[in-house]
Length: 322
Image 1 (cartoon, rainbow, N blue to C red):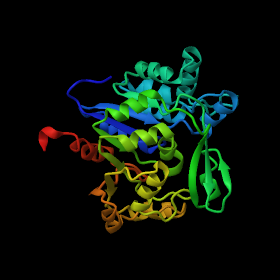
Image 2 (cartoon, one colour; image 1 turned 45 degrees about the vertical axis):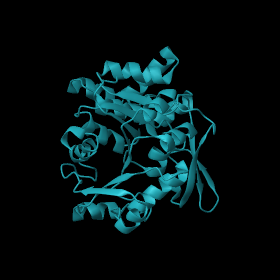
Image 3 (cartoon, one colour; image 1 turned 135 degrees about the vertical axis):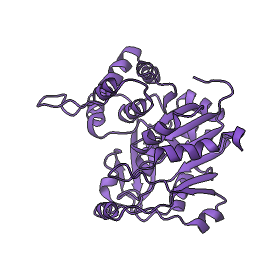
Image 4 (cartoon, rainbow, N blue to C red; image 1 turned 90 degrees about the horizontal axis):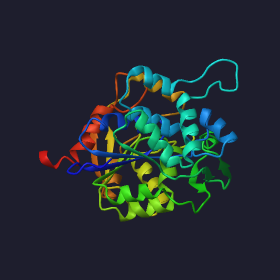
């Protein structure tokens, strides 16, 4: 849904970090495209994929919800999880709607488009690929772990992640969106299991290497056990560069506000700690650092203040106010 004279902003990601970011960006006058991973295999999505060979609907559902413009009742219905002692227990109604629409259209991208229209989404939402894929990780000790939801559970150092089928084609609309972007944003989220599944698709990696637009990475605020133990901000960037095969990131957005002590203690029990901003190392990599107090104090867990992050991102394309 491209409108002339508005900047084209493409966001890549998945998991819980991406919807938060999109919630802020949708308020700005931009042509927004969300490129979403379909490698999830946990929870309701995992059970669906055990029965039906379909791209993972869960992350797509959360993005549609974040970008929806409908009343609260319809939003809650879309995100509702079925209860009771039956075969549908735990399934999200939105996941089932996406799967049903996919059966009708026989094209997952088209199914996503139709469901997004139902929920009055003004942005473009694109699955990164149009087929069912499986994520694997090779650990530093040489072992291979298969399945997105299994990878963090091993609590081993990850060497690399990869997708099967290994020569799968990217959604052609994704490649087009990246080539026409004025700004490309890599969202926060689980680095190896929500972000990398987009970037390791060969066509996507090549499009990022060729992109004329600046590429911004919104760095996670906390490390994640089993994925980014002891990672600094530059470690996140280096991991992305290793997987893409080129130094693509121009700008990093980082949080410099402290986490509340009681919250930090709760996260320590999960072996998650604030990501350190190693400014000197980032400077050596010629990466521009944008830092601000981005901790959202309105919720009892760690997440970005989506209004602040969206404002920082919009400034990068708002040339009228330069």
